Length: 266
Image 1 (spheres, rainbow, N blue to C red):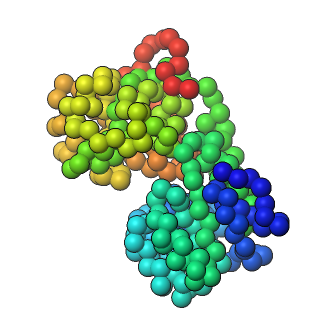
Image 2 (cartoon, helix red, strand yellow):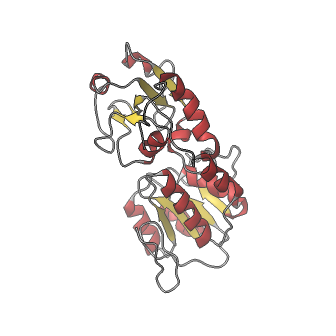
């Protein structure tokens, strides 16, 4: 990742120069967590988002299909000053198509909590926006040392079963809660529930997104193992939810954490 500038032009998380007007007045966001971040920071500039951008509640902007199939032609017709995307959430061909149409696209690449803070600061600076108060509160919330935490396994999909692995934002969140991700060997390993259980988690954590695990859909696959349900955005969204996510997740994991001993994460 480059932090330099090309001829005074800001560069995104992938080092791509993004020429922007001053000020930026019209933004389309293709990332739900970044949609929430922009809406809480500069609501007047947000003009378009995906159907998966559910926060903040009551957001009234044009919906441009999903993260994987955005309505590229319509976005180009809207002529926004900026489209915000993410390396993992969105597809490179759509980014290239928008750029060929003359639309500036800012691509984020966020895999750690500190990386999220740095990326958000960089995005807001590029748009000539002051870093918001909620971002400072989030940084303070995540500044404390990690406690001792449990061994965890976290599925993100079923049929096929896919799990939070290493080198992901969610894995870093877990480590900063002191949790040990027993399936950190690959980014999103595909394992049957019994294979994940064999890795020895103290608890299986079931988020409600991207797959919507519920009390009736998920726990049945892990007989004999403790299971907890969480709000998925606490684990995977980087934005205003970070201000309270640590406290909420820590309270869920606390009953399964060792009473003392060295930090399980890092």
